[in-house]
Length: 248
Image (cartoon, rainbow, N blue to C red; front, top):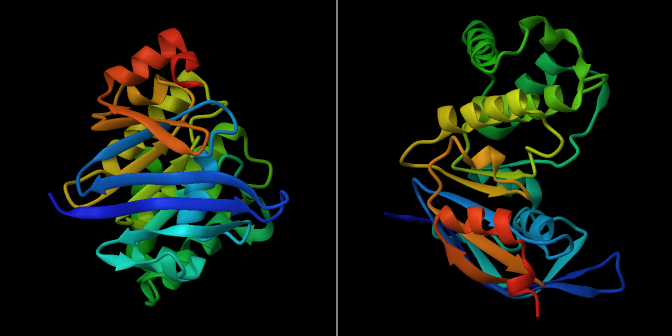
């Protein structure tokens, strides 16, 4: 298997929190074709890791590097990182008044690929993907995420992932606050996206989203470091026993 994402000795501080160190020598390797899961108690650095991969200005890398597809992307701007083929869904998706979902999807696709999508084919692709996710097609005319329920917003994130078809999808608590049916839809979207050449990194507190997925590795993140890595059974262990064993 080919390496897709390799993180070496990553140390970060939070610029908006008195330069507090959050990630403390974190190492992670994700190969093509794999699904990885990161779990950990609140404040352990899970979302910080996702945002650092995307070079969020809130977090400063003080040591270490992020290698994607063999290229060091540690200091690339966020838009260039996205164009390299990394996608990220958010815990709380943004609302954009005045911009329809259709406009957003077309503009994003154009921005990532550098080419204007064929309108007819793109419309058919959107319609097909929405049908697969159980979304009503007329939703494309609504303002982006405005007035959407939590489940609709999360489905919208998965729709974007399917249409952009990135090399790596980072899903930051996409299952948070969803009911059973919505979680099944998100899992279905991940399975529709997943192939032997891409990869998924799921950040979650729950094992519900994992039940329909073939997870390759589960990582436990505590106090800025990965303290244990295992297979899907590790997630079940955490569900049963919590993180106490790993908290010093």
